Image (cartoon, rainbow, N blue to C red):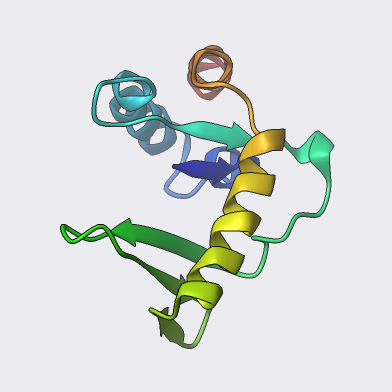
Length: 115
């Protein structure tokens, strides 16, 4: 999963809530089942700014994509449409922090929310 830095910095619910959310997120940063990477502000604009996107690999080996904006969502199953979204994801991931760097960053934010 790639998280935009704004997701972690925008204090929704106040410092205590944010600290608790980060406490729950931290152990999931690098496991056998999950990898979380933060896309830092310093990268600037990126192709995934307009909403969320999920790419799902189905049991038969095919992939589908789901994009969700503020008011609607779109499902894609055609190979070329999914491949185009996979390329966007891969490009964003290339600029994201590694899972280890993300864990360090998350820990730093947790300390800031405790202050």
